[in-house]
Length: 164
Image (cartoon, rainbow, N blue to C red):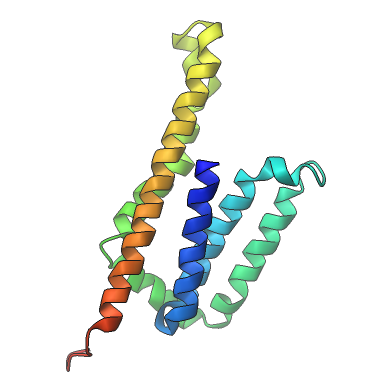
């Protein structure tokens, strides 16, 4: 429930940023859509009540929906994404994604734990380490998202300088 809640907040913040700040709209739609697909994947048990594996179709729908506007405005999207990479929160976001998508999968490999632990403990330890590294990654992404929102909120309040 914690991971799903964190993902929901990340999605909500990015979609709100997309709505509020037009100069960041398309990058935030992409980022929010990416995390929406991750949220749908985390809720696969809920979607399995409809049909086993149906989460894939909902994630594809969310992905296509979040790609439409950014692809229509590709130059602006790329410019906005480049601007995002220059924020102080980009590194934290990438670190969180690495923890979620790479490290948690590596730490979740059955062979790793069965090689060093008795079978009775291996599954519990594997699940604990995998879920823990995922939660750590999600918290990094949430922190980056909230920091990013505050960063641009602060920029929006500043008067434009002559060099901008």
